[in-house]
Length: 271
Ligand code: 2HA
Ligand code: ZN
Image (cartoon, rainbow, N blue to C red; front, side, top):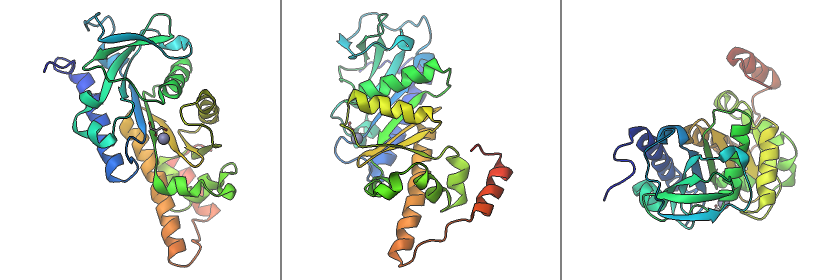
């Protein structure tokens, strides 16, 4: 079957990154059934004034709001109800490339098949709209269900501002170094709702790259989907170290404030 990717190596490379990450999410046990979603702004990879067929496969469909920075943007989106493990195996049969219309309120499904995008499309597109508006180079949004981070979100003590950031940073130097903005917190809200989307943007606006949705999962942004995944993976590694220390029967010491400050100086880290 002919694919939009056949003649577009840059687009194929971005979508292969999505497939690779989808496989990691499944292997880690963070993607039960159709859990999680990924969207990537592929406008640059499709190419401006591109020769893609004007004839879309389906649409226009309403986004549900008007997102003025998304005019004529292209996205690769995991399909609604599709499984990460299937996205890993065959991304173009379990996700689709969509194009936002000129009115910034609708989209067409362009390729390769009519796979309606993720149920979290409104929140993902609202975040992409916000990223473009602030001139960010970030192109990827990732939502997943990392077991240990979600478990920590079931305790109110960990949901106070930057309590988890400090705890997770202190478990291993890499987390401080590679998640320098820490972990934002979003209180429980209905999955797929506009209020969850606005609360997520408000938390990202506080200068986090990864936010924890209470009793649900995380939402991460990055230059590409690999970068977004690596931050979540690093944060969850810290959660695993904390869990294992507790399971061994003690509360872990954590790196000291002085060790953390030293690290921040050495790596020139923000905050
Ligand atoms: O798309 O994880 O929150 C599946 C989800 C929704
Ligand atoms: Zn979810």
